[in-house]
Amino acid sequence: MLLREVDYARPATVDEAIALLTTYEGARPLAGGQTIVNVMKARAAAPDVLVDLADLDELRTIGFSSEGLLEIGAMVTYTQLMGSSEVEVARPILAEVASTIADVQVRNRGTIGGNVCVNDPTNHLPPLLVVLDATFAIRGASGERTVPADEFFLGVYMSAVEEGELLTKICVPPSSGAGDGFAGVTIGKHGTYIADAAATVAEGDVRIALGCVAAVPVRATSMEERLAGRDLSEASVRAAAEGLGATLDPPSDVHGSADYRRRLAEVSAVRAVLQAAGRGKGA
Ligand SMILES: Cc1cc2nc3c(=O)[nH]c(=O)nc-3n(C[C@H](O)[C@H](O)[C@H](O)COP(=O)(O)OP(=O)(O)OC[C@H]3O[C@@H](n4cnc5c(N)ncnc54)[C@H](O)[C@@H]3O)c2cc1C
Image (cartoon, rainbow, N blue to C red):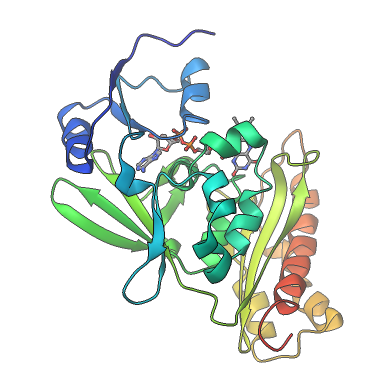
């Protein structure tokens, strides 16, 4: 289906982009276009103006802050994440997970900023960024604010980025010896997840976030508490996951019933924790 008529702007600076987004009520940022263009074609959204972020080079960089945080610009593509030496050194799980998103065309165009701003509950990156304790820099007409991952994802297709604002970068602490894991079950190879889980393990502290079971990533806090300070043998991790599914209220759809997703969430959490435990310092 052809797109409805839409105005198009290609600002040269972040300030110019924000000015356009605040001036025109129906204006929306255009990043990789891998979601928004499809949504527009399906007539599920109809922005009046697309503000293309393609020329904003400052949103395409990957580097380190003075505190040593990995800083990833919102317009960094999955392919860039996969080839970044900074990501490789600081948090290689980001490249690993990005490499499994969809196909090469989507990975070449799709951006980390678009992935989290759209907050599709089946997207790969939201649960991962929650366990990595990422923070999100959001800029608007009145300045910049920083939002932690636990407060960034608000609902299906809703994030803390408000109208007239731009996500500019995502900051991720370096692993510093932590092990990271990601596991789940997809619809076919490299397909969308039916359920997934991300985990980090650092000095007896375990963080687990589940994807596809609610509108936003869900922290498996009871499982985390059961594992805190414990030996992470397969038997103890499996025991800690028992009953996790019963605490969830996932959707049923054509790809799986709610009960199937509950079971997959438990299995994914076990696999992600064991993977993380096998990768950290001292593993
Ligand atoms: C066939 C196919 C399969 C896919 N499968 C998967 C999958 O399995 N897992 C997965 O994670 N993803 C998947 N995707 C989605 C893909 O990852 C998209 O790239 C991603 O969801 C959106 O990123 P984008 O850069 O294309 O953003 P766009 O589509 O350009 O934008 C998405 C939304 O975010 C807003 N936005 C973008 N950047 C900013 C910003 N900096 N500040 C404020 N708002 C912003 C836009 O206004 C828009 O509302 C798939 C896509 C396709 C086409």
